[in-house]
Amino acid sequence: MQITVYGLWHLGCVTAACLAEAGHQVVGLDRDCRIIAGLRRGEPPLLEPGLAELIREQSAAGRLRFTDDPCDALPGSELVWVTFDTPVNDRDEADVAFVRSELEAIADQLSTGQRLLISSQVPVGFSQALERDWAGRGVRVAVSPENLRLGKALEVFRNSERTVVGVRSEADRQFLEPLLTPFCRRIEWMSVESAEMTKHALNAFLATSVTFINEIARLCEAVGADAKEVERGLKSEARIGPQAYLAPGGAIAGGTLKRDLQFLAQRGRECDVATPLVAGVLASNAAHEDWLRRCLERVLAGVEQPVVTLLGLTYKPGTDTLRRSSSIELGRWLHSRGVRVTACDPAVRQLPADLAAIIELKATAEEALAGADAAVVATEWPAFREFQPQTLAAHMRRPCLIDPNHFLSMQMGNGKHLRYIATGRAA
Image 1 (cartoon, rainbow, N blue to C red):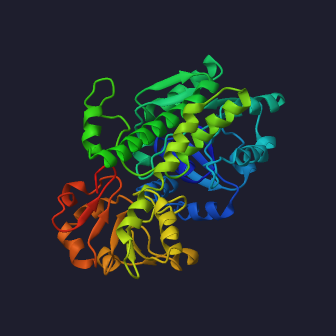
Image 2: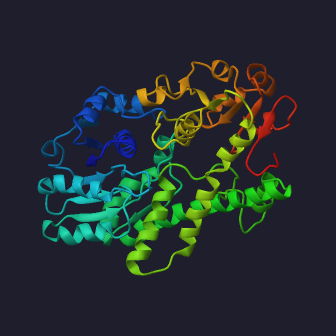
Image 3: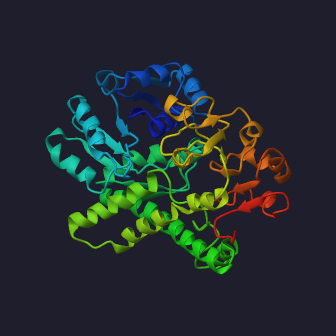
């Protein structure tokens, strides 16, 4: 199939490369010429394990090419797969107008009967509005909400447990089914609006689960219970199960889950439908966002010229993305309080000038930990599992490790060599 993948950041690069790997002829389109220049060199705009190699392989095989010219990308294309990563501002509000403006930029190059498959993060009703406004163009719209996981994106795209697809007709289903079936175990077919709403509802449910267990964890700390034991009790209940999103840890970070909570809250206001649960999840998460700061304030109380080490800086392991990283936000806060901040991260070799002024990036964990009064497991890189409590204690001035998500609890949790603090445990 001749496919144009429009929007080449994380979602688009993964989609384009995997489609080409499956044998399709793929043109990656993005109006940012800098992104296109990098991709033509085999350099995607962000780190994702295996992605650069796959792009170079498929480009060399002649199944994948990149352009910034819609007139080059769209003629003859049987499907335009819309894959923009929707920008999210600091209030977790999605810039949906950006996606719409990018679509308007190619509207005149679309042919009657051409199909759009929208995977960008957009609110329910977006596709309906696009169809209404483009009624005279004869373009067919379907929706398959993005299902990316940073650090495991190729694996998830190639073999998704299930894919949600919203279509308008049986003809649209018959067109998309052979394309999508090789990439997933099951397709959940539904209406376009239901597909858009499913994405919101899924992320809101996950956010509710995270917020619920963190609220329980704060109570556990106050009454002397262990939140990890409570987690085990919950997951052993058949009506909940072992895969439930119930692990005490940090607050919801980044824009993904919060974005969909905001989508639901906004639609509730527009439709005059009360959404008190959504508001409560946002409020509870905001209360938990201060957990780590309160821990650090207690640990550093009375310490002169305090030093804190951030173990990890990226948004998630497996990527080099710093945007919306809770570790970076913590570093800014610590610096504002007069704390010297050191850090190490396997994927970060150099910090932007504004961050380098407040965070001292070290080449190794040992260098970063030297003289520290506290260390924070901020990004859960597998390499950090090699740390042993005696090693950390030997380098730190005041051996204390704060590990919000219990990432290193197996080797650090006995308290023999250093003070170990994790969410939901009496410190």
